[in-house]
Image (spheres, helix red, strand yellow):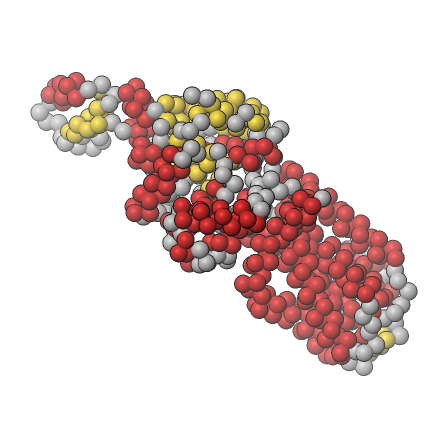
Length: 287
Length: 249
């Protein structure tokens, strides 16, 4: 599959601190790509460089073949961005926010009217179009922000922590919307702290730690490398030990070999969190 | 050119919509301070005093008009831009759009120009009613508009360069407040020592006050001050361009 986003030795330094170091990765056209990492790992810096908001110190990013620094104008036409902090004008209505975004993306009056109406339906906010943003729930605000980012029909949508602060219902509704967008042909690049979100949505995930990409593959392939079955054993009633096995049979053999004095032992499927913790030594979202 | 103007209007449009939702409180807050100055300095302190051949009231009103243009244009542009940058983060959306930085700067300044022009015109009308010696001419209106534009660009520049609310507050107390009182708004600069005069002539509000006062009192027009004012506009605009180029790709 062709690469839609490509980074080459991408590096960003803030003084002596290297926020992103020699990042080489490719995001394929049409996929949902998850970018995982603890706070301060370099996720948001990477997104800001990809979306033309920050200049890289060295290396480059190409989106749809366009260099984000040298051909920023062309890049801006193919990207849509939903920032973690929403970036909506909360003193305006949903419709006014959409109108503003449509104007700055050069949609004609007729196109604006048509797209705004379509998108309000698409994100299920038609009934709230004339409500002020600050009167909407968190989930509705996120959907409004997504609608704003889709006005100019971007080919790739960047979602920075899209479900932070949402309740379970709001999160699932947003997941459905992301899947629908992807089915309609939009490439999705999302960062998340929620492992179940990455597992539920992403075709492939990249894990970044201290500014370096330390893993990139499908969730299943990453789990396979670690072991598809996890054993949690609280051997001395103090600390839980984790061991990973390719299948249940070998996990069961290991459990049977444990001394009879062993505490609680759990056999379960491994998950991306296990992969993440083994690779980084940190919980996702931990500092 | 048409695309440029269209983009300027698009950037201005969102601030206009905001103003439409909050116009009563916005207008009221912009008028309270100049009306208090008018009462305190024009009637309170200046009652019965003459300065440069006219009553102090006639002398001080163009200064207060200029001061109103300064504070309202500066704050109108700077405060909205700061909110957009740090609170709503909606300024990033502009930077990620195909709108040029030149359109962004002018568009963001226009809300300051509009607010400053409305408030200072209102004070000017009140002033003319209180002191019929003052003359309103088309030239005065144009210079008032130019002053609002200079101060709004100043506001945009400061809001782009200062990266925190605390920094903005410090700037306001250290730079703006002294400028408000010392730029020939409430007294004649002829009365002060040459060294201080040179310092005060380096401030844009001084030149706005002197040009507006000359026009309102039908005195010889200080062309040098007018051109310096235009020079400030060019300098502030260049500063904004550099700040935005440094900040984004």
